Each structure stands twice: as structure tokens, then as C-alpha cells.
Image (tube, rainbow, N blue to C red):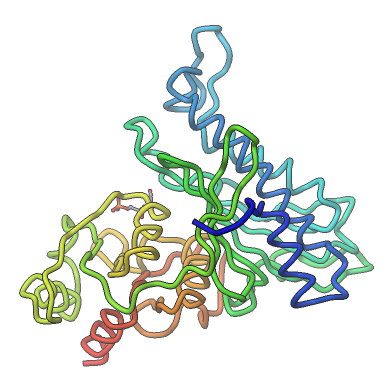
Length: 334
Ligand code: P6P
């Protein structure tokens, strides 16, 4: 826990901006406050889902006869609303929408693009498992014509991210984010409705004792993955490992970030290109991992070097502590 009086995420962002970019307009911190506002609203909805009868499939009717909206549809609307009114976001893209959303009022002079998965792992909500929101913030050149194809703004390499982070709706609600100057975690204090700095400058341990993979797919993994997992299980990296898999990327990565180890979603028979989405799952997670001293790859190259070809393209995601990732990459290079 950070010492001294509680520091809110807004204060932290402003202090970081003053320290790093003294002449910044405050634009960016205003944008991030749109995300923290959305996170509080979504956290409230997730917390009450079982009571508010908003679980399950969209299209049904709840006890009041109201149309039920799936939580991730709800979360998506909240993010579009909170970010669309910031005045500096020109384009948004979401796991829930086939195409990017252009903010008409700001399409000429908006300087940011936000790409997000509004509620990742939402199938776990019905069984009260942690879920999360994942976001990636990119810069955008202004477009006085207002005619530029928004896909040009969205399909940017992960290295170009201005910021990235996630909200984990777990036993407590946390925001973990980076602007390229370390990784910092903030825990929501419901009594004052503010995210308070709780994990300053998070560093991923150089190795861990946990590996996280859906073992049901293991028979379809390529040989180097199977050999790597066998080495972990046999203690060949010098320590005993446990297997932990929640099936919610944000929760599985949050544990890996704090405790070390590896999270793997390799190519499988069902997902030969990998299951996870590059732009709004792998890229933000990879940015955080590298900023915390870890590594993230698709098995051939760093995730952040991949040039996106399409909005919802999938990728394998292998992410975790330096020692385990170095061994895995050695095996994958053959
Ligand atoms: P599987 C959730 O549906 C998700 O997109 C990620 O949050 C999670 O890491 C992954 O899929 C789990 O996939 O195939 O193991 O159920």
C-alpha cells in the first residue's frame, strides 16, 4: 500500500503529466477520467448483476418486464457514452462492434483513438468469477477534412500505444494502467467513489511458480509448447509450478503481473491463429507486461511489433516473466 495520504488516479495522472510533459494540455488525463467514470458505472452493474436480473442472454425480459441487456452490451454503451463525450476522442473501436465508431463532433480535431473490450470474460459473470475491461489508447493526427477512414486510425502497431490498461472487477475493483512510464494499480474505494493508488510501479517478478493455460487444448499444442509445459511440471526450471486457469484474461494476467509465471494461449485446433484479439486484448496486455519487466509474444515476434491487418484479428498470446518466456522462446526457435 502506498505511504502517505491517499492518491487518486486523477491526481496520479496529473502529477505524472506535470513531471513528464510539463506543457501537456491535460487532454490525456481528461480522457482517462472518462475511463475511470465508466469503470465505476460498470463495476456497479457487475456487482448488482445477479440482483438486477441482468445476467444471461440479451433479448430476454427481467422481472419488471424490461428488456434484458447482456452486461457486456451494457458495459459497451457505458464506455461509448463516457468516452464519446470527452471532446478529444475521435474514434472508438470495441469488441462489441463490427466497425469503428466515429465521434462525429470530434472527427476532425480529436487526437485520440480508444480501442476496448468492454467486458472480457463476461461468460464468467453468471458464476461470479472476476471479469474485466481492457483498453488501449492511441494517438491520431487531426483530420481537418473529417473524411479519413477511421480504420487507418485504429489499425496501429501496439508499439504506438499512448496508454493501456484494464479494470478488474474482482473481490475489489482495480484499475491497472501504463502510459509508458511504469505500471500502476489503483483500487476503488467505494466509500468515496475514487480509485486510490494501491500498487505503485508494479514489477513482474523475474520468474514465478504458476503457469496458466487451458490444459483441455494441450493435445493440439505444437511440440515446443508441450515440451515447455512438461519442463515446468518436471521442475526443470529449478522450482515446482502450480497450474491456475480462471478463463478470464484480465484475472489470469493480473495474477501473472503480480506473482510472475506465464499465461499462454497458443494456437489450437479450434483457433489456429490463436483465440485472443490483437488490438483490444493482446496489445494492451503486452504493453503492461513489457512496462513491468516481462515479455509478450505471439510465438514468433513481440506482440507489440505485429502490424494489425483487421480490427478483430486474433493472435496467439504468450505473456509472463522474463525467465519462463526466455525458455519458451528458445524452445519455439527450435
Ligand atoms: P478458453 C474469455 O472468453 C476470453 O476471451 C479471455 O478472457 C480468456 O482468457 C479466454 O477467452 C478463455 O478462452 O478457450 O480457455 O475458454
